[in-house]
Image (tube, rainbow over all chains, first blue to last red; front, top):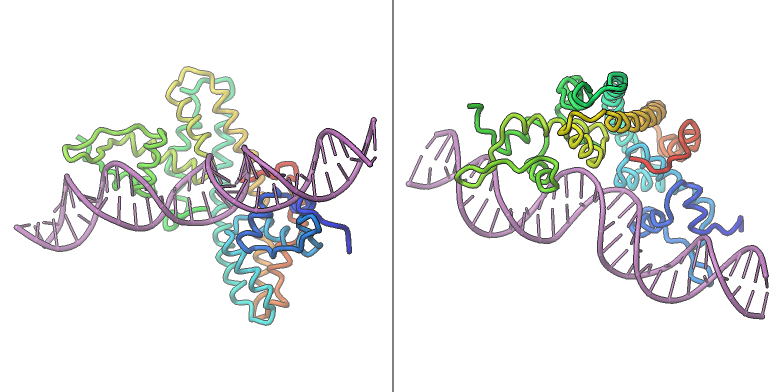
Length: 147
Length: 147
DNA sequence: TCTTGAACCTATAGTTACTGTAGACATTAC
DNA sequence: GTAATGTCTACAGTAACTATAGGTTCAAGA
């Protein structure tokens, strides 16, 4: 009987939109909660926990399918955790690639901003830099699939 | 004169799918090229250049709208480059936020993978870590809108 | 107590940035 | 010359939301 958690409350707690919560319910990522007499969803704290888990994983780039897998693993905690481990490892190398590329971009963005100061487009390197292939060669070419 | 660049060639050169190129043409991000006698698109090197530009910007997280803006700026190089500068700056802070978060995640993923070795889900911290709010507090709470 | 405004409900359509499929025509390689 | 591969259009599908319409419920103030 904590406090009555409405969908708005848990959405706010997890930092997402109300519709997103309903969407997650619809696709079976969170269980359908009981309803009040007036047909409104009533949650408990575990819902916040799960929703926060999902939002964190999402913000960090896990696709919903990976999250779904992790959740189903956590619902059955007697398995060996090779599967969770594999998901985490795959995610780690993806994260490394992103960090690498983002650092390269950061560098270029700073350079651009410096050089732009007061100039004209013609003198500005923003656009060149983005056409520059050197950004690629530092990194994978094997995985054109990104995000 | 150059070589006849088919859509397949430029897609390959830029590291994207053929359909993606047609899609960019359809939404007006790249100009419609001339056609061969058999109605197939024939490109020149500038198309590779523009397409590469777009792909780089996309891979680095620029939304198509920002790219569209940058392109239209570059087509008119006598303007002051405040606008390109503003786009770059906005992107920079976004990039910083992402890098920050990804580093936090990287750390946690490594910890998870360590702790997982040979264990069971019940002893594994992958799932806890992803529910952990401490990842948030290091970073923005003001911009729930992400990617 | 009544009322009004915010929050909730369902259902459906729209968004971004692609990706895939079908069925037909073109090109290239043997 | 024919078979494989590439390209064409048009349209449907995907992920992960986000917005809208039209209605109901709830909480707070007059």
